[in-house]
Image (cartoon, rainbow over all chains, first blue to last red; front, side, top):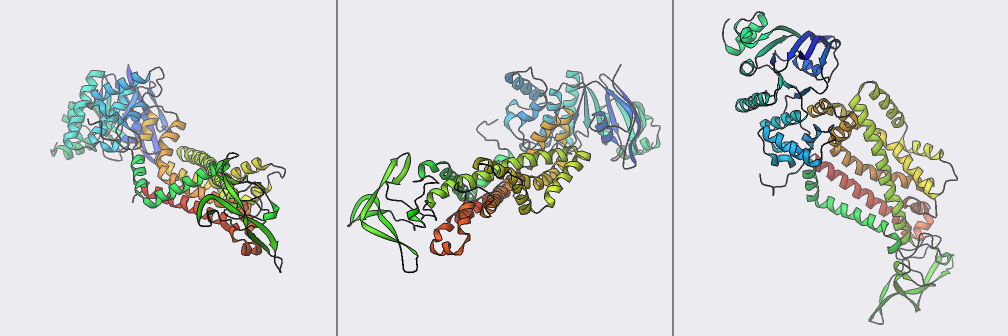
Length: 236
Length: 345
């Protein structure tokens, strides 16, 4: 049983087909990487999956509230006028049964889970580094109890060391909470370490998908080969 | 984590920067003083705004005396009587034989003089009403009308602009065309036209409220257009998208994510708009369409000074103009400093 089903989805902007007949299936516990150059339609696909834009054609099947998204820019994804408490509380807004103390406890324990101190609730986004902000964004997503986490270039804006820390954290969280990931990235080296399935996007289409080792060792599509060459400086 | 460290939001930092500006703080305190005097008019002023004595028409400012034959005594005023000179001008003769001591805390007023004495600190108008009292009672109308009008037009402007910008598309189109209809007509003529639509048998409270509504109907449109432009770019921010994916209702997103971001612009504009509303009310009252006599406002007090003869012989009836100037200037300086504080670049 698939937890998320994307069936033959297309979207055009002013005559340009940003996403062109994409189909995907995601099972519980999957860790799927979507790779491709900028402008290949990765983010448009992500936004359609999240329901932020409606596709021109095709169907996306996902249970209500199963998906949450971590954005690329750790500066832009947190409201600069809100402190961490309000930012995290937003994820719990629909949960009216919780008392104020339960909410505080939930937020504090989630912050510990993502490797932050629970004492930062009163602080504002501009007081944190990029990595810390991304941890806060992850905490916000997880408070909404999603089953699938969509990470749209979630570590691309961070430096290599912090990238490693965040991907390690994501791996741990995946195990602990039984999450499913869609990891959108242009960074093949990172993807190879992180995900176990891969889909390659090119000009709005998925040109190749499969298990990570299979695709990396025997790429079928010329674009995939090009991409691998560029990433690992090898001739295949 | 050091809990003693104060964590400031951008708004808090901006207010700290504002407090550091001396001129702005002076103007702010000046405004606080004006509003306090307006609020306390019943207590501070020696007379009510309609207390008149025709024997003291255009009586010049009365000096309060503290010395009598070289000795400190309880403050008092001398008796004055009006006579006419050879060319029928009013002349007030001071009669040093009769003194009227100042009464403190009598009849619920800070200071007053028992009849038949009259106390005119800032002179009297044509009907012998105390300018000092009328100016502070008038401050109630003039200063509150700006705030109320701004509150109303900002409520409309922010909401309309926020909704238009956030949703875009046809909602934006319809709302912006409505805005343009209001902006198309020159402000003062629109004001006169709207005022003409108000029934003539309104009492002073109804006239007051209708002036508030008229002012806000003029001001909301330009604000809505600017807020809409900001909302159009703000709705693409990731934190707005994040809130959407969390399922937060649109109206909550508009009010809590979009509109607070416009604060630096709207705070400054709010102050500048208050001052323009004070001027608009004065303009309306000067031409006799605003607040009606005997209820004073700075505008209709100033309308007495429209003729040259009284101004020559009783220049103190221009005083309300000074107060309009002070209030408008203070609001402008505070508005400018707020904008600088929020947008240091």
